[in-house]
Image (cartoon, rainbow over all chains, first blue to last red; front, side, top):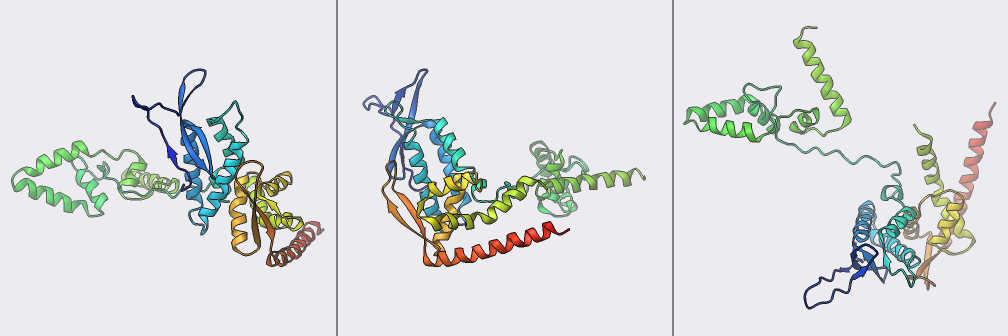
Length: 219
Length: 109
């Protein structure tokens, strides 16, 4: 959002805070913004909302070669709509104004034409958990194995070696047991293996778990 | 499947054609185009138009001039270029052909 500059005047003992005005209930802080070459006084909460909206629009147009031009057209239009909402008695843009212009201009995903808001790509961040399914003691080695995509046996050998080498391994194992959370939900188990948490993956994973239980019970 | 989605896709397909058709009569600024398209229920929100106008301008179909506004910042008045007129002419033809094809399929007994 390049064309919005804001100054917040902070009250000190010497400076008079010019950006405060009285409403019926309480004083609100306003923010000065420059939109399409016009200065507006905007309530702080309304400013946050507007900034959020413009940011999400900018993100929506980020693939566009002339994103800056589209944004400045839209900002110009917002300035025009704001101006029509100000009178001699109403000099500050409020949350209501911002919400109204957001309805007029539309939500970012509607504007860009993806229309039926596509799902954002699922995060496939890998997180470390203790694996209760493959555990021997606390599931620490199984969890480390899943996280690094190694055979848990490698970790078990390392820990046993550390224990034999001076007992440090026991303390380390206990600390990890305490600080590493157990993967309880299916979503956590997917995260542990670095699979994205999607409905499809959860379904598959639940199905797999069902199969293993079935096998174990010899059905 | 829901009908809203299909309807939205249909409208999206003809939106660019509609913008050019509005501009073929006289030059307008974005809000004039929006009002006309809203009345015809082709678009729902204003924001949809701005990226399309910029794309059509970049493609050489439209040109614009700045005009003072009685209220707020100056406005961009868009008009069709020569290329835009030829392009619109092509779209007119293909629209007619499309309507005919659809009718032919629908009315087949």
